Image (cartoon, rainbow, N blue to C red; front, side, top):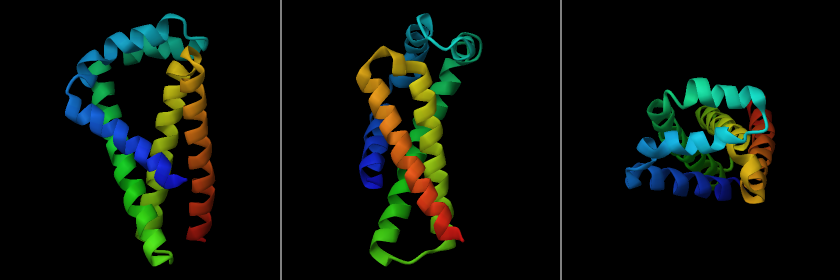
Length: 141
């Protein structure tokens, strides 16, 4: 399951990195997300923090997705091949899972209300990453 989540992060990030339009167009997208956002505190965050700094948030999102994808790919593939715990790999896995969870929570708060697919996909990915995090934390002990 984590490889499927990793594939989604990789596909999304590569599209953003190679497409060249994401960072410049994020402000317009965030304005749409803020327009009818049902969470007043998050709408305020979008309007007063994210939109005025859309290029910074776009860059952080693009690279955050890519780093999440790389961290998950390396750690999950290592654990599948070696099937034994390694402290550095465990930390990398935990970092990738937490990064993905933060991204999915943010995406859900921003756009989950726009469609059932935005709602469902972000919640599903968040849940899978939460289960993965519980597993990863047990590896450390």
